[in-house]
Amino acid sequence: MIPAAPVITVDGPSGAGKGTVSRLLAEALDWRFLDSGALYRLVALAARKRALAMDDEAGVIEIAGNLDVRFETVPGVETVRVWLGDEEVSHAIRTESCADDASRIAAIAGVRRRLLARQRAFRGPPGLVADGRDMGTVVFPDAAIKFFLTATPKERAQRRYKQLKEKGIDVNLRNLLEEIARRDQRDQAREVAPLRPAEDALVVDTTGQPVAAVLQCVVETIRVRGLWVG
Ligand code: C5P
Image 1 (cartoon, rainbow, N blue to C red):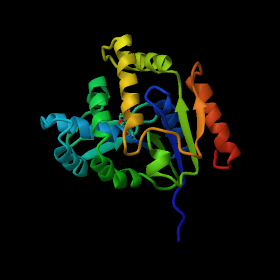
Image 2: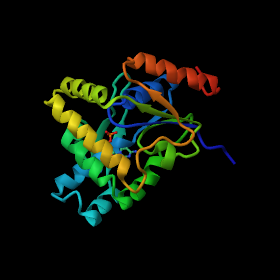
Image 3: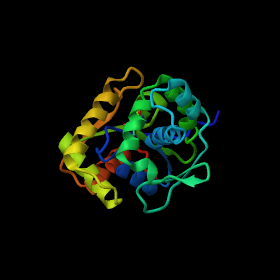
């Protein structure tokens, strides 16, 4: 039997730096990349477009099972480009309201079940870097290395603020801090696949650390574990 391609998982709450670090890591390794949060955001956006309420479980589950999406990773660009049907929604899925909707529909067990096979399909040679909340606990429990990135809520809010401003999205820092706290609470308290480190995850506190330092720490760990091929 051909062994399954290796997976490195990078989980953690929003603003912990996992999006940037996992994207750069995938690029450095020349591995595939899964931004699982984008899938939840896409389901939420598709539900909005159909004027569904986020608690319309049957409707949202149906959308999750029939998502017509396409991802494209662009070298040197931090976030992936995303299409829903024929429409590019790379920016539309990055708003805070879409993130809030995403964290609501992410608590629906049927939605998570429908997205499971789609996420696992990203796995392939030479390997996959998977970014999310439950990559190490549920989607790829057999991952070769599992990271769980954290940072204080204040720092995470400041990072999100900067990222959103750079994308031209208007936000207020205090509101952002409240929204992040609300989303953390929802993600950690949900019954299915709550946000938590896998038992065998390496927890990395990124507070006060520039991206380059976090990336270096992650790369060193991968080297020590013998997975670095470069
Ligand atoms: O990572 P991102 O901010 O794009 O995720 C948006 C929301 O999607 C999260 O707040 C979380 O509720 C949900 N999510 C999840 N499981 C994942 C990735 C994201 O529940 N693996």
